[in-house]
Length: 276
Image: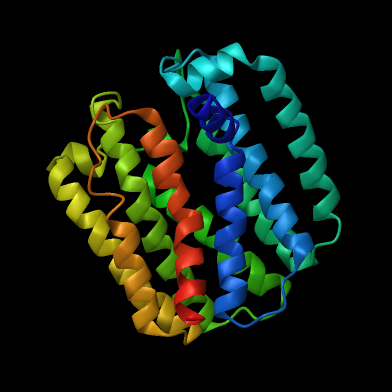
């Protein structure tokens, strides 16, 4: 029963959408800004839509449809379609309240997210998307997430400046760090042409790089927000322990629940540490 609940929570993409909202909530807290619940709601629904669409597209393309997550999606197509509809409606409704410059930024992120998932025919009998470009997949993920949880907020608050850029770099490094375990998971599934970090240096050195990136991210977030560096470093160090067990072919829920859960645990730790 417990496993089934976690599968529904994670494989429906609700967990990752909650993670995006919580990471955004952290940025409001770090910058001492009033919480914009409409923007947070938009981030939740747009993340839910993006991830559900990307993974549903894999079913349509019949691409890598084995594994627990894809089995869940195949067995729950009605739920998946319902989530697509609800998340699309939520995304549209909450986008109506956003500032013009925020919508411009969103349109750029939307195009990137679409091209990341949707395969376009570039040559005869050949289709590819952005994640097929060697070495770019993990960087795109980091950039889109950081833009969604930092730049969108500062854009909506009309506070885009050099400190936004420093925070953006920090969150990009953080997201890349917690995404490396997923490349470790897919080490023997990804085509060698993708040249992921684990493919290039092996999974054990990749874990070390992931931890270092997470710790380094704390410094840039400190530069961008002026928040307590030691609390940021301590929280980064704690969540880094979650990455250490990363192995190829490890159980899917470890990645989908534990690693994605860092997006919720990390902000919670920082809040607790700052209020002790």
